Image 1 (cartoon, rainbow, N blue to C red):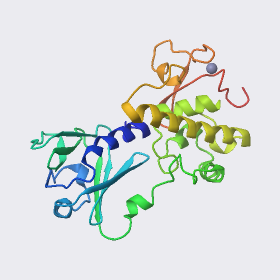
Image 2 (cartoon, protein in one colour):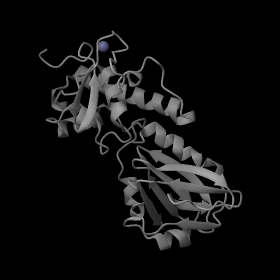
Image 3 (cartoon, protein in one colour):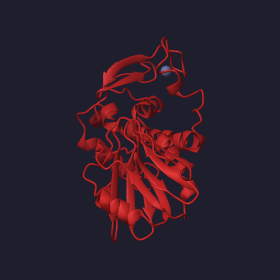
Image 4 (cartoon, helix red, strand yellow):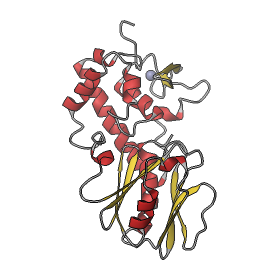
Length: 268
Ligand SMILES: [Zn+2]
């Protein structure tokens, strides 16, 4: 599942096409990724327009084109963006191809859990303006985090951290990394976090997001060896801080790894 940093990595793959016109659009209109999207309008309005900007917000990306067109892309499980030389002929899973004079911009998605949205007109499309605040933005403040945790107070903090409506872009490995850094047991009900834990939680969320974006988002490099991610899937994986064997359980429907010594359960 692409997470924040991977999304940022893919967003940049189309940078080569910035300020360049789209000569033609090729797409597989019947594919599931275009559900609810007017693909005729997409082809009509993007043809002849120029790519002017791209933004990633959580797992959602938007590509803006001259003339007021917005192309939203969600990568889902297997979606990927890339470029190829001009005149590229789309392969089976290349569901959207924008042909430019010197290159082709391609969205490929074999399993089609991704999504392509399109908007043309004045203002900002709802699917973009209603997205949760970015973790790096000023709106992601102590008050926002406290209110979100309060709204989901009975749910384990690990499950809440995976809600895209609150923490856009955080996926499974990042959630485990954040809770390990904040020293919070993943099963802790969100409403039971102390004020100090909420602060540690928000700081760790910002830190892991920022560092993941910087390290992975730039050239798909690996996080430092001190991060939990390198140990969580290893058999006999241990906490990189103190060597305690990692505990594993399914929380919020996802496999969760944590250190019982650094992240003790309440009352333990
Ligand atoms: Zn530990």
